[in-house]
Length: 146
Image 1 (cartoon, one colour):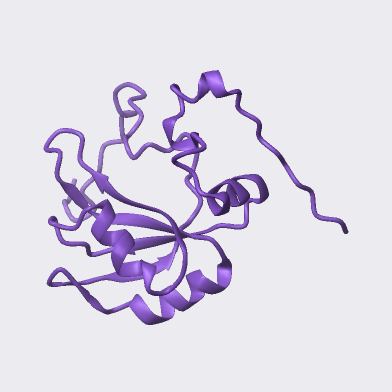
Image 2 (cartoon, one colour):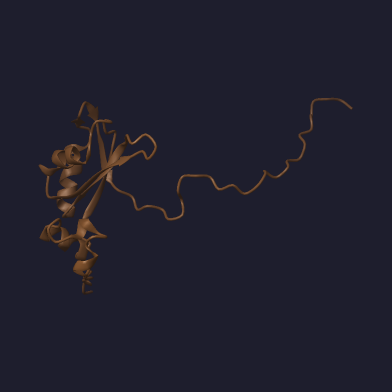
């Protein structure tokens, strides 16, 4: 079975809308990953509140080519939520990083590294309000004598 190659072409006039895809900001490897989809994303948990994107990328760069490193931030407090994601250029580099970094210390905290799971669409972690709960049948006391 032949592998398919998807090429995304963004006109130069649109780079102001997508600065991360601008030719000056994207190395050839980033563009290659975007086109072929061969990147491997890892979940990193247990991060210190002081770990930022560049610190995360630097820690994982010794295990392979880091395409992106992102620490997830809380919108309200603008503080780290204690986890993030690191994307590697290849599966082999990602496997090596999992093996080497899982259970290691980073900024004074033990981190946990695993493959990122795909995000479930529609599940935003918030319960869906569907009105009041259905009434239950009354519980009868079996022990009482009538």
